Length: 371
Image (tube, rainbow, N blue to C red; front, side, top):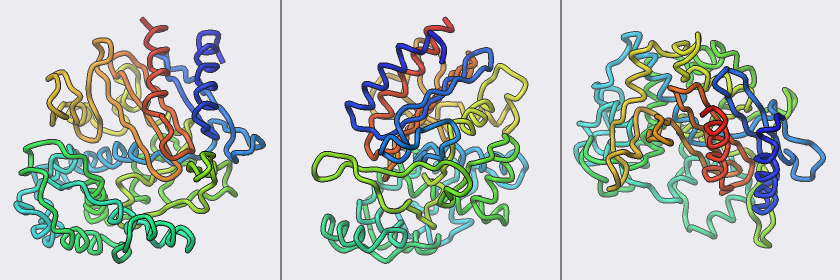
């Protein structure tokens, strides 16, 4: 740990304790390419097994940047056009929302498909078979009946049709965050490549970037350190979640698991300064990913915007790409200042932990020292 990060480390440790977060792992990639790893707390929640940069965490919706990268790789190779309509792959989608036959792949990538926000019961059904019997009883008591479990893309589309929700808008009209839209992109990737979503990422993202511990399937502690997952219990203390959630029909929206060491290698591909800047995507396609597509909310035209897989705005005048994530046992944040060679990430093992608030503190320190 450098002297410049000691004060920040101590501040984030106080925040970790205040928010009762069992463990956190962070990274700062400095403009000269050096990476600093910062770790707090434990992966077991007991203070016995410390977090390190080789500890596997869930990253939730940071997964969407990987999904977008994969689809853009296929587009760059001429395997698909972002103007292609989703119904070309899944005809039944035309019945999910009005104008469903007009939804194009670029709409899904930028959360502008018109898909509405689905209920908690719907989201629970996507992961239902990965829950223990005790979890299932608890969730049913909280939200009522849960629909049939979803295992395939056909299950997912059928469940979306049954919801009969009003659309969020016409395709391309406005931003409405959609996990289901990204889940569908994952199935398009599988249809185009003839590989499972995890196999495709392993061959075209993980291996090229030397990401040795990244996976979509449930991590195995036999392969190295893996964090336990936690949520706040009824007594206001963290309790361990008995099993890693898994959603076979929705893997591409938030089920990637990785380490900060691997994540540093991945983020390096989005730094314009350096020899590896185009390792995952050709320059022109990476530029498309970083181009603002849909304005979020009614605020300033300066953003935030959503591009293709990333939120986009300005940080102290510099272009920033970032994403946040939150799901059962996971809260995460990562950001890149591509014109300045800076990247940061913060992973935690507690549902609802303020990673999206604490993570930018890493970015602030990197920017302060680089300025």
